[in-house]
Length: 89
Image (tube, rainbow, N blue to C red):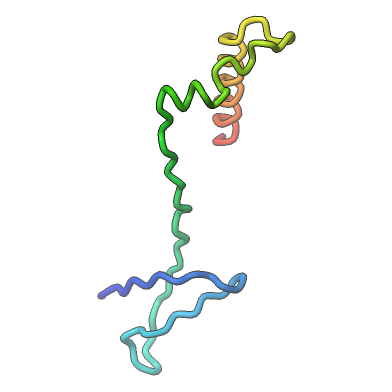
């Protein structure tokens, strides 16, 4: 069996139109629809100068509710990681 790969865009919810197939009227075919993964936007990396100018460094320095910013960041990362693990279960 020879497969024909065709990529189409869903223009109306639940409907895909496929044309130009090399099959004749009355021929039975099997159609398998697989969604393409979302393309991720590639972010450019910041230079040290850009990072310093971004305002991200020292962002939490004036927060009275955060005594140790490294410990706070670590807690946030652990919380997000545990939520990801729980979502996978």
